[in-house]
Length: 351
Image (cartoon, rainbow, N blue to C red):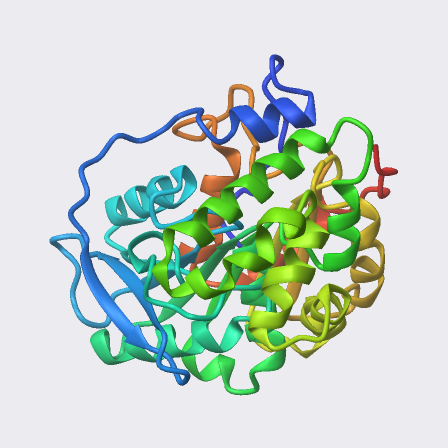
């Protein structure tokens, strides 16, 4: 059955063809200003840590109506611009949205002794089970952004019962091979990205009193100047990995994509400055005959950017509306067929 939806190609705004402009301006462009009215739910994790769900429930929502959980990216939280935008847009369509703060993030600052990371997919399982108890008989979809997308793919590919909890998922710009994404920060002119993320992560650690005994790992002579050093000195040992490389190896979802049994759409950009397009080459080949996972690579868009020129969409945030299409369509399988047809284009080389 052919989908009635149109899945238009992404054409960048003429002022934002540069991938770095897409990435940077994309964090601020078309912000939605709305007051915080969510109800908070705490989820107890197996190791006794807590994470927080922010429940945005529209007034016309009823039991059995659609639910979506949103997962933010590295150094983000429930208040990240893309999380607020998507919650608002989905609410307007009558969808109940749960914005998940990963361990220790946002409203969960100080409630976790272990750091969040790309392999925290069992945390997502706990959150989904809580949502299922709050919304019995409601179909649940997932939208993950960047690192949140990586966690989503790990959950779908590594947790055998994932299809019992969710009926579809969409992820935007997820790193598939963590070690390759970290290497990007070592390129010339990419130091600003690295300083931004490392600085934010260190501030996050220092805010939490539960990490106080571990701050020596990221201070003084141990102060990390790179993502690799931060993960090697802090993330990996606290999360139970031998090293950063061990963490990257065990938590990269590329090897488990074929195990996913839930209709899943992966959207990324060939010019993403933070996720090398070459890391998608194997995925393109391995997923060519996969009937559940659809990969759509745009030529432009940067990292979580996708600010488009004039289209029939209500605003220029092209990726927001494609996420909405996937989450709300009657049949993601039929829409996937159209997307695959649109995606038949050669893979560009990394910039």
